[in-house]
Length: 111
Image (cartoon, rainbow, N blue to C red; front, side):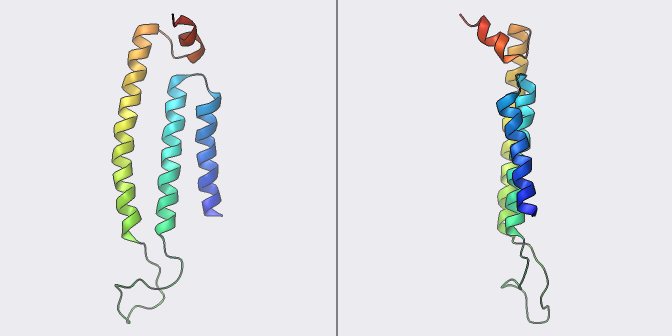
């Protein structure tokens, strides 16, 4: 069920990217998709049953989290912040040049 909710969040972001005509809304949709993928990776690393190999016999049947997906998600968050900053700066430059965020108007101005 939780994995399905990650997929729903990803679909919301994909809807924003495909349907919306405003560049800023598209950037927000891309950010939502990135966060959905990060949440999915974190949920994949969670151990629902069993004991990890590093735990001794004194701790039994505890729920733990695998640290490798957490490290990968931290790296992905840093990369996504950098790409988000780049996309926002491109949106600012496009707005300075064309005075609009609407994709259809920007395509008409191409020439």
